[in-house]
Image (cartoon, rainbow, N blue to C red):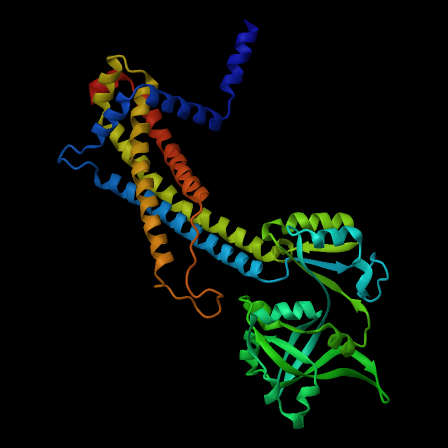
Length: 450
């Protein structure tokens, strides 16, 4: 006796959320086992005054759910398209993994280490694996001030080996003709430098022009400490598809940068490209185990702030647009509640004929599912139409600050499954109150006041 009373108290203490979920599952089970409840729900949706299938409020509910589903799918597809385009540009670049020394690295001095410090058998095996590292370039990078006439800007100067320079030439859009270099300026004897297309356009430079690089690292002169200066001739202008890189990164030969900084046989990073872009994080993890005293970052970690911002923005937009569906679900609550009040007599008759509470509740759950289903299907079709138009026609032009001038679109199946399921869940939650109200209706009250 005491045990049964304890169990009943435990059941009574079940959280309202759990009780609501269980009640909703029972209604769905009744809807599945008793298909006539859906047929009755469709009949109830018909207006008494005319033969329209949906009342005005019901139509607003369908349009609201459809608008919410359409907005979420289009926005998520466009944002996913931006992320995919960004990854494609990173894939086309040659910096997939970056290795940098730390204070624990061997022969570490001021951030510099010998070039041959990573000449290890394990690393060499990765180099020879066609699925692994396709490029392994020791690099000496430094921040410099670039002066062209009266224009000055800060750039990152990277000294790379000849193999990397040859690869960079595949991205060259303009190159200097040695025969056109001005001999009186001594351009033919100057070391070459490669600027990004965005930087060259910003400073008004073309191949063959001479620029001056100023290193913040001072050197001791006869009078006092003076900055390092070196003139370079622009050998070419490259286009990588990444405006940020083109604006702030310049390349020169490794020997020229070492001579400029007066550092011989040292580097401060290794740039690695891989054959399979998606395998870069796994390969980076393997390299970390081989050289734990170095900092190894893959492309995802190098751009962690950017991808984190995209994920946060995508989540925020999804939550905001989900409120469209939530507002539409309020209309569904209103529609079904009015339907319960209008159909008191019919509900009472069904109960006196033997209909169970769950079957009565299933009638209105079926109505809500029908309204939400129509809106969801319409939203999916309309979003496919909009996304297809955006993908095929360039009728939306973005400002020049974006790397893409048109809206990129990506069709991801998880979005076209997850968003409709979420919308239907919100609609089902909205059906809970009116269905419970109909199930609790007393048949005598329905007949007396119906």
